[in-house]
Structures are given as C-alpha cells and as structure tokens.
Amino acid sequence: MSPYAARIRAIEALLLEKGVLTEPEVQDSIAYMEARSPANGARLVARAWVDEGFEELLLSDAKAAASQLGMEPEHPAEFVVVKNTPGVHNLIVCTLCSCYPRAVLGRPPDWYKSFEYRSRAVREPRAVMREFGFELSEGVEVIVHDSTADVRYMVLPMRPAGTEDLSEEELADLVTRDSLVGVNVPRF
Amino acid sequence: MTFEPGDRVRVLPSAKPGHVRTPGYLKGKSGWIEAMIGEFPNPEELAYGHSGLPERPLYKVGFLQSDLWHDYEGDAEDHLYADVYEHWLEPGEGGTR
Image (tube, chains in turn brown, green):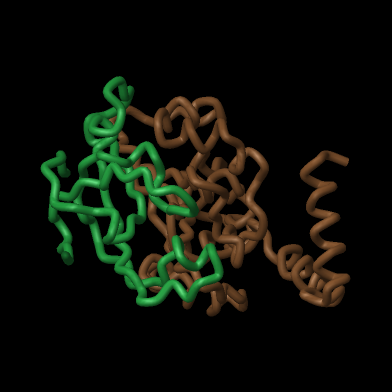
C-alpha cells in the first residue's frame, strides 16, 4: 500500500471510529461514483448529434439536459458543455487539482490528475493532443478551459463524417472519454 | 469594482497563501472578461470551515496564449479561459480577441 493509501485508510478508520462518518455513508459515496461514467457523457453527445433542440439545451443548461436523459447531475458546481466546431477545438484541464464533471462522468482518468497533463495542457495543448494521437487540422483555433473554480466542463465533440446511418446508440459508442475532455476526437 | 464582458483586466500578482483558486501562471497576466458566471461562496474561506459569505462574483476570463507564454507554439488566436474571482482582478491592458 502506498503512503497516501495508508494515510487515507487511517483517516477513514478514525472518521468512522469518531462517528463523523458511518459505514453506509461511505458505501453510498462509493455507489454514487460507481453509478457515473463516461457513458453518460456519450449519451448526451449522441442525443445532441441527432436532436438540434437537445443540443441547444445541452449548451445553455447542461444540468437540465442531463436530467432529461434520466441522469442525476445535482452538484453545487455549475456544469457547462463547450462545443467543438470546424474552426474551434476545446480542451479541458484543472491545473489546480482534478476538477471534473464527476456528477455526470464519474471519476476522472488518472492522467487527468497527473502533474504532467495539468502543467502541459495549458502551455502546449497542441503537443499534448498530438501525444494522444490527435493531429489538429491546419487553421483550427484551440481554446483551453482551466476549471479553476466553480464550473465543471465537458466537450461536445463534432459528429464524425460518414455516420449518417448510425443509430443514436451506435453514435454513443463512438464517443470516448478522451473526446469529452478534448485530448482526442470521436472517430468512425 | 464590477466588470462587464469585454473589459480588460489583470490578475493580481498576489502571493496570498492557502487555498486560493487562482493558479500561479495567471498571476500578473492580462486578459478580458468573457462572461460573468455567477456568485459563489468564497472558496478561500470555505476551505477552512467558514461560511464563505458574502458570495463573491466569479468571471470567466480570457487570455491570449501568446500573452501567457512568450514561446507559445500555436495559432495567434489560441486562447485560454479560467474562472477567476472578482477580488483577484483589477483593470488591465492585455490583448483581447
């Protein structure tokens, strides 16, 4: 066990012993995180791709859009979705810690929390994307969103060409977690 | 001091210790107010068990990447948004879109 894991176990044991937390509360919290995953984000994106009205709602009130699909996005922080276009590509980072739309997507990937990603995403976003296997087209502007405070961001990627005949479920399968952060794009 | 979208601002170069939500690489940098996000309890107080009240205005602030990094490699249009509390901002002269 790493020193950090050992410390967390010790803190958890103390909180339980002192009655600050109860075991069911710890289990509820684990269940909350387990119930959320990038699949939620993929469903939001796929619906936006097939339904213009839903896309509008997703971009103006993302929590309402998530609720409409049966998700429970309630969280004190705001939830904002930013849209990629042929001329603009968005990338999300939290340089200070690991802010991420957990209420919808669950836990962030480990690399999202790494010092390397957090420091490089703001300084050389194009190089970071290249390392994820994504080469940005010429002339596309990059916007980095550093979630420094009370807003959690998710990217609405562009629908890949040639997917006109796919069902909403098949479209959702194309949407990867990486594309919701903006280090890559959905491919078909 | 309240700001409107389009206003040029500068992030205070303050070295205030503790749980501040203004990252070091933005301190002293200039940009523009993109939007007002809302008012939230001050995280610098909340983190230490205080109420964080009164709520503080939070702005979405834009910065040209070339204003942040002298050796930035990328398009001149590339920019960055960060969410910055009003008490970290003063009027500035930075680049804008």
